[in-house]
Image 1 (cartoon, rainbow, N blue to C red):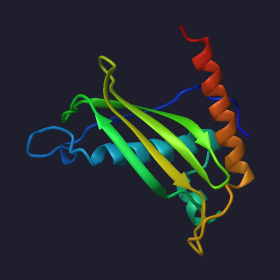
Image 2 (cartoon, rainbow, N blue to C red):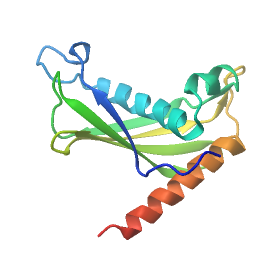
Image 3 (spheres, rainbow, N blue to C red):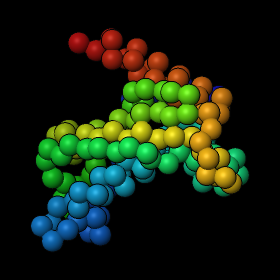
Image 4 (cartoon, one colour):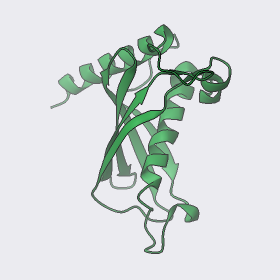
Length: 153
């Protein structure tokens, strides 16, 4: 397992012209796209291999089975979003991932969401226990995040 990374995990992403709607704000489903980009970056950063390798070579997928979000403030074209990823819960076959999206410049919380993912075999699309490699990553990251939260005022 690679060396410890900072917690919570943060991915920084620009809001592009194609991300906004007629009201000139981030189109609300695009927040879920930001969530998934952060999830991919989490694998890339912590395992030092692309998420595409997990799917295509290792044949392990983590599709969403439940998703929800609360929206607080809009993001606009030209803003930079900071997407924080934490792992709230780990089950036998599933994990609950929490995302907080902030405007990088002033740390305004714009959206908070939760996505439950389930581990599947990509060849059969059937659920399976989270493989040890990923369970260990999720558990170590959750423990580090929980430990940091207890140290903060």
